[in-house]
View 1 (cartoon, one colour):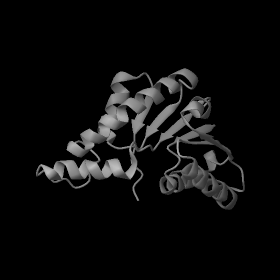
View 2 (cartoon, one colour):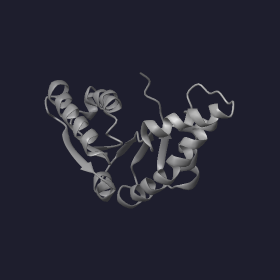
View 3 (cartoon, one colour):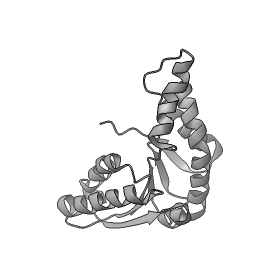
Length: 174
């Protein structure tokens, strides 16, 4: 079984989700493909996942890293499951999701769902999700796409309505 983690530069999230994976008996021998566009963050996650594989999993999982959009298809190729945890624009964009509405008197608590901040986030996310979906449909059309990225409702709704990809929206609470 192959699991590809898209947005693997999110080290804390990688730790939670792939830690759970390595503690699940049926998934201990899986192949894990880590994919990100940030080389430093991808390397930090790779080191962590290899350490978890050693400590939690007796080195049973096969871990491989893929960097950059040019390697995305290869990371996805043959996947059974794709875990999506990307955040387009990083912290600076997320800050603007709060600051712009606040400037106009709109207060929001988190900006992860359907408020104005969620709309901003969705406008950044959907074009990237469209491109990822095209790659998934080409190189692993039977894979399940597990979307953890916010805004959950908009991302999952877009994927279900406009792609042929099998997908579901999930949340891995802290």
